[in-house]
Image 1 (cartoon, rainbow over the protein chains, first blue to last red):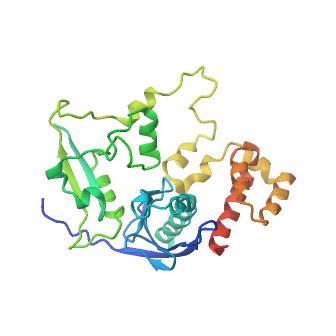
Image 2: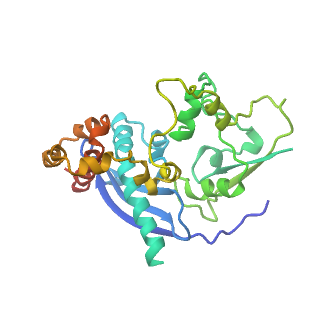
Image 3: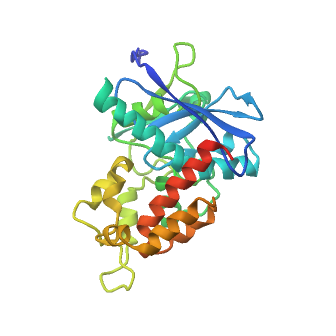
Length: 104
Length: 194
């Protein structure tokens, strides 16, 4: 099957959040589909001040990160991301929804 | 012959590994299959399970491919949608319809803990999308608690910053409204980055 150019664009939602219990990880920004609302976001993050090349995959409806252990193996990281996921998901989904319903 | 689809976002296992050459296999086939595992797989997005998700909807697979990679797809690192043609039931695997499996495991109407909801008629809207989670609030409870003095006292105690309160609130219907306040407080703590 030939490749398809979806002409997809993304929108950045600043976050700059850190976990209370594990401040080494910082959630920097979310990347969401700018063309239409999608219940997913890529979350850029840093560990001890160093931004990672791969993003966390956030399911906005389920409010969970998909396989965070694939990116970082430490228990603290897994726990911090699982605690932060619903909070970030609510913020990102409401921000994205507001943007689609008013500003586009 | 039914055709199923599966999206593979950039950087994910089935994006980096060609399933047309390797064949699909679940990430952990050693785990004993069960209804609980199906629920975990669907509800929590756990891929460390004895299952692998397929869909009859190409747009759904496309969505997963484009939106759930570890980086945005590009021309040089594209996302993929697999098209899987299944010839029949004797292909060395079992196709499971999670809806039927979970429904079959539901308790009967005389069970003391039923699976039917006891919220408003619109409660399913909250199930469909987290954007409409306000429809999940138990009927009347939120209104009662809004004027409950204890709830207000509880709200003040949140400023002390004890996150364990969140769990306590969630465990009590009486504190549903307070739970929402707790949630807000917890979020603001996170934003401050204390």
